[in-house]
Length: 282
Image 1 (spheres, rainbow, N blue to C red):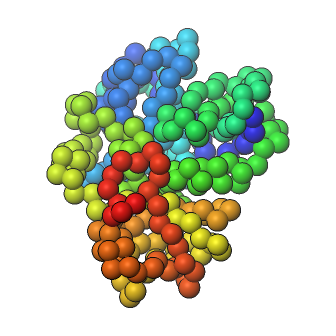
Image 2: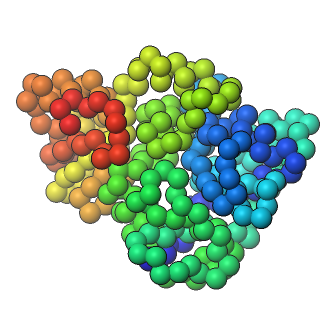
């Protein structure tokens, strides 16, 4: 089992007798039903329904009033401030745990590093597991974060900051609805009305999809069908990439028999195997 320290991730702890109820009311996933040892994929949104920060929520075994958030390090401080703002008088303690770090594990199970709290990645079983462990232990792991990134990309899983812009993307555009990141049956949370409306009206026109090419175009390159822009290339590795595209324009281009090009490189656009949205003839 390869292990990789993920230096771009941070750990926030949310604890206290009202921690579960507090988180449940502000994030997109269902925290009320999260069992000890389990995990959920979720996000905190703007009132307009756009992603401020996404993260994995883990409920450590033996700690019923504690939750650990595996979040982007670049956004951890802002996430802490946002949660503090929403806390009001709730009996909740919030803290950024600098002594803890995040690692990823995938492939065959050959055991875990000592001191690691492991949980399955809730987005997709093939992603493997996430580990929360002391920073020194994480930094000592021999795995390569780039190898994990290639694994993620090959599975078609988008990553914030690389494949979409925080503060400018709706959850549906990043496939959160396809990866169990949104509970459409739970009560209200910030941005819920917009997300629910998009779900029930089927108005998500932009999606994160897989891209395949011989040579990777530069990240951010426009994907063209003829003279029309259909999307942009995000992260890539080993001939695979993630692209944020307009589904209607992709369908029109396929119907017209047009090829997709990015920076002069031909691109094949594919719907991930786990996705169930419509994408032309894909």
